[in-house]
Image (cartoon, rainbow over all chains, first blue to last red; front, top):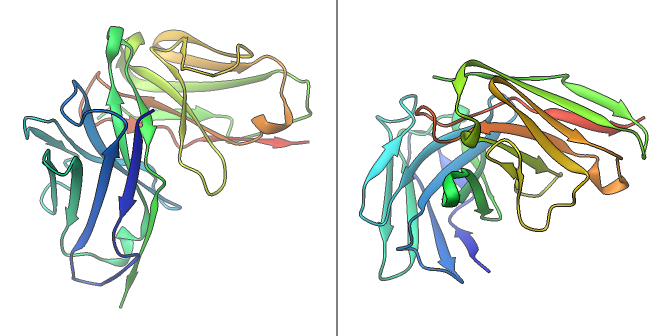
Length: 121
Length: 109
């Protein structure tokens, strides 16, 4: 059973950098899956932030691309999210998730527990 | 970007009733790229359906998905007490960025 365990601070100062990690267990981070970050806020609902593959390849949401870096550390079996120049609009619950497309059926089949990130002034 | 519009915003039903949730896209979504999720308060979303109609592991058969192109439907044949939650559709694989609908809340009448 794949498990995703998130960690990182729940309070970030405005104009600072949000940093979260997601540790993968019960499965290989080098499998044929993309690993995504998604956030959920009252104003925007569920918003896909971006994804990383075990090769290090990435895709980002254009709305956040200039501020986002998603990386993978295979030796630690974890993925990371960095979001710079934080504002109140970035207050949200952040999730990591595994993208699955086996048999050509696509969906996010495993999710982290979520981290509430609040931006303070 | 593919915009997904879910309707209705809220569905008020009683246990045992049938729920029909709609997800419409502003561009064609390949059927195997449409997923449905259930989310309860304080929990992460849970994958219910992928490929528009394939139930994820462990999902009861009262949940079914259908549709193609720009119109997709999630049906819950007989609502159980644990089914009252918010449901989201997602397009994943058709066009970056991957997007979600705004959600349909199924509440107890």
